Image (tube, helix red, strand yellow):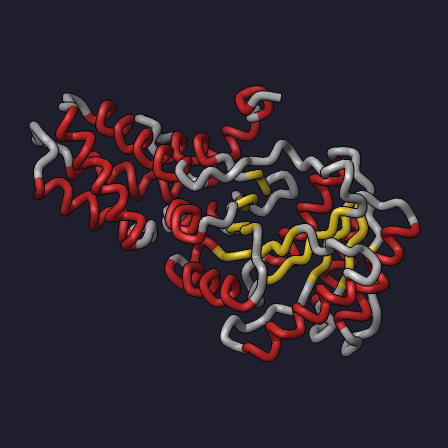
Length: 320
């Protein structure tokens, strides 16, 4: 199925609405910066650099974008705001495309990997358990049989929250009492999923402080215990980051990537912040797929990240 066939009008509207604050911040600042400009000069490039850095795109990625704009400006001239927006859009899409990371189709599960095991990590407060609930909803909606594992056993509230999501979505949750061994919960979850022919397993883990090395080691224990049942588990180690924290999300990503084998990212709470540029920087810097983005509180407001549509939304020459 081609990309443009499954990015629906409804998804685009959700994306545009969710990025409204970021879009207004970036777009309006760029529009003000080019008033009266006849060419892309050093003053404009300096101002553009500041706009991207203050939008939490990150210094390294911003400098890459500026270099691409300089190279493009040496070849072409722009006449209008619209043309500059198109130039920026095309160069950022081109930069992200260099990562050569394939984008998944809507909540598909490889047929040869059943159950498909997702272990979710991240610090408290980033929207981790909510993301799990929304993932469960989307995978079930796609026709998959889903099981959740409440391996965040350090907080009773975490278990309760996951149970609420399980009830809401209509998927089973494997749990033990508070204080139980998280690895034991993970083992029970994948064992139950395998015995009952589940397609997808999503394991919640404790909200680890990213600078606590000892707690990170426990994630390795959870992984090794699951592999006794499903040898290649987990298929995804999904790190959830709060987009509204800007540069702190970068730091958390650095620490988690260094401590465990993160291979997917979810960036949440983009609807409540003007710092959505962090998605561009994280996509570029870590060479790990941003797989999901959270664009609101609704159960449908978790989307698979499509870099082309994300960047196009930011640089559309209109504001709703």
